[in-house]
Image 1 (cartoon, one colour):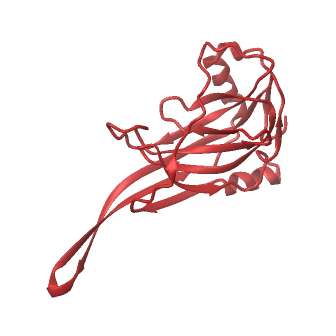
Image 2 (cartoon, one colour; image 1 turned 135 degrees about the horizontal axis):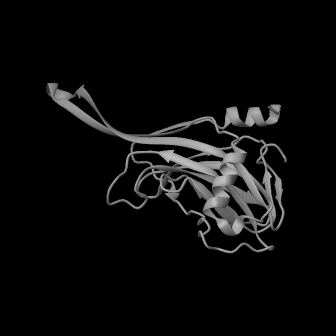
Length: 205
């Protein structure tokens, strides 16, 4: 395996923990393409497997805790891919530009961003997205959970004090380069992409 790719995969493993009720901002996701959408020669595309395992939370905006991958481009646009339990193989449409995978955001079931983590440089840094091409960027499997933890302490006059902490955690396994398999699944789910050239960004092929 290429040393730069190996370094990127190793550094991309995440463990992020939040306690309490710290809010940063609300998430905004880049929509995936619809199954019947027809590609054009003017757009460019990113695809891969973006899967997360998390307990479902009823009556919530997101339905479960998740993670977002933020791509920032030199034309000033940003795109955020949402890791999903329902549709892990995703395809998003972008404007041709030079882009980088710049940060990971950690999102609760209410759609609030609870934390951010910068992404180290690697094969998804400063890569040029040509029009009419679909770029594979990897297979990602993450997990998230939420636990309520109670802590007991003795206060004034011997009274027992109970402090409840909302413990939120996100993690991600080492990303995989599963180009052939995921490309086949992408083209099966998006039949109109069958003739669009594909490129494995992780290996440069």
